[in-house]
Length: 179
Figure 1 (cartoon, rainbow, N blue to C red):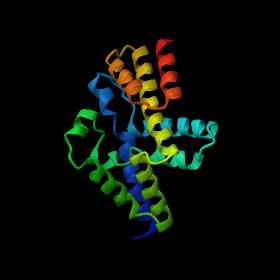
Figure 2: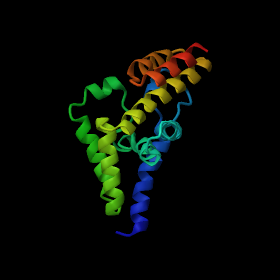
Figure 3: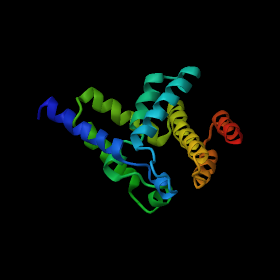
């Protein structure tokens, strides 16, 4: 296969993420819910800023943030309750990562797989930051939807507050929720 074909296959996954609306928002009545790609972009920017501020590896943070929801291009955007029902979710996510990785040149493939493993396991300080930023962004988006009148987003805001482990980020979200 040519690089053109490989790039087209990768872009197909990217397109799916651009079109895939976040299920949690749709279930709470948000008419024009953000896409998974929009969420990942926001997580990447916030991760870049926070990693830089904390003296962490910015490239690794951005890489993890950009790929953290990549498996959703193949398995969909699942709510937490839907995820609980899937026994082999972690294996399915890894299969999705491997599907993309096998298209990439070996160095890029290795970086993708290792970044995904660290992120999914939360096995580094950068991975733990990005995991918390994922929840922070969800909470910030909830606040924006609440301001637009989607009061069902309070549930997601509260969930984000509970799931963020970093005390500084949790307090930031709490303060913004009071504003």
